[in-house]
Structure formats: C-alpha cells, structure tokens
Length: 331
Image 1 (cartoon, rainbow, N blue to C red):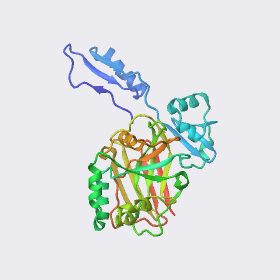
Image 2: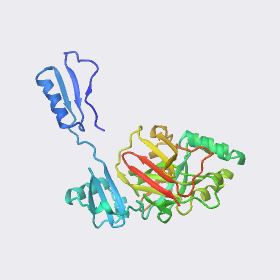
Image 3: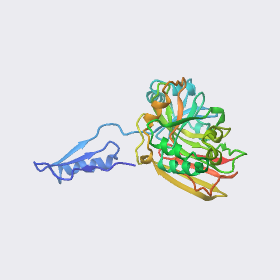
Image 4: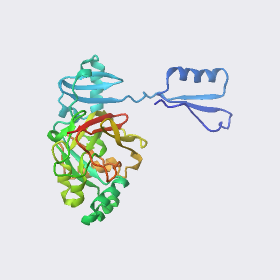
C-alpha cells in the first residue's frame, strides 16, 4: 500500500508549509505536489525521500529448483543449494545480484512448491500470546498444570521446544496430519522466523504448528507427543527475505474450511505478541548451534473453541501479508 504525502500540522514561523513525499508514492502524484510549490503555493517546502522503496523479495524451493521472486518476476537460482542460501552471509545482496544478472523465467508458474526447509530444524515458542496462555491453562487445569503456563507467560525465560525436521514437514498444498490417538486436534497459525547460522533473522515464513490439545492437556510432559509427529508441521509457501522487522499491525489470518464452508476463522495482530522475536532467537542460540540455520515459530494467538476439533478433509488456510498464504488439507 502506498504512503500518502505527509503535511506538517502547522506552518513554520516564516510562513512555510512542509510536505514530505515518501519514496513509494507514484510519479504522477509527486509531480503534482511539485507543481503546487511553483505555482499555487510558493511557500510550500517539499522534501523528497530519495531512498529506494522497499521491494518484497521472496525465496521459493520447488521440485525443479530454487527461485527468487521480485516485483512479480521469478528468477532461477543456479548453483547455490538451499542450505547454502540460508547460510549466506548476506542473503539479500546475494538474491539481488541474481535478479540483476538473470532473465525472468516462466518455469516457476507450473512448478510444485516444496516446503522451504532442507537441513534446518524447526523450533517453536509457546505461550507468547495472552490468548494462548488462557487456552493452555484451560486444557490442563484438571491435570494441575495450569499454573505452569501462567508462570511461563510472565517469566523472563520463554518456553522453547523442538518441533520438526524436514522429513516431518509439509509445504503449501501438502497434507498435515492429526494423531490417531488424539481426540482434540487444532492448527496453530504462527509467524515463523528464518534464522541464519549466526543467529540473525533473515526472513519470515508461515508456519502451522499442528497440536493435539487433549494429549498436552492431560500432562504438560506429554508436549513432545502432542507436537512432534509425521505431518505435524507445515511451512510455506516461501520465505520473505528481509532483515527488517514486520510492522506491528501485520495480521495473521486463519480459516478452516469443512466441505467448502468456513468452520472457523480468526485473526491476530503481531502487536499482541508478548515476546520480541530477537529475544526468542537469542535464547534459542544459547549453547546451541545451527550450522544450516533454523526456523523458529513464534507462537499462536488464534485458538478455536474447545468444541472444535479438526477432521480429515478439512482445509487449513493461513495468510500473513506480505508473505502469502499457506494452505493444507488434513489427511
């Protein structure tokens, strides 16, 4: 979305009025503002932001190779492996050089998307939203574990746990699974950090942390069984490559469709995330190394009601702009 010109609320002491033209405004609007200065408003002071407007750069892993996307055009990546890309010292500059040196290709349009993971591990943070705190306390109250979740929500040290490997992870359009011995299963839509081997956030993707709420609720020590199993993790559709934080107004949207009807929908803004993503990464990298980088799910603030459980055939659709949409079917 383009930013409008910004006017100072009052003229300066010499009668001048200042207007700022942001870098992302279109050229016709900028030309019109400049014309006001020379004709109708001679005391109008125009300041132009000469910085280049941010362009979304995305990285995709497909069945026919790796691609970078910029401004709606896709470019094939040649020799660099997926692990080499995520371990690159300056991934943004690397991808920019590929865009400048290669011609766009149409091969990407028909390619099957693969999960954006190879030699990385997937980790997750828990109880990072107030809504998640309440849900965890509710599901574990009969087991006497509710107090644990209340305490970790306000503690300095976050809850971090191992979530998945590449072999257990599915990508966009893949099938996620619910455990056969679970009675209460839900998706957990999460902003997922892409972290380099040096502990730097280099991008973002969308994650679905499939969870068996009844198993974790029975005893918090059962969390690995409730969270880690084949098809319990989905990532995709690709990676938004940027070292800049996403705006706090960024929304995570969840839709669950059953027989083409919306069975549940919810949303949450990143402003409700209690933990700073950089702090989560710092704790994860304490006495821990990730030679190929890693993914870190940041927790969920969207929790379906206790009367809801996933069923085979349900479609789980998670959208985070500007990353995209991750959609999966329950096996």
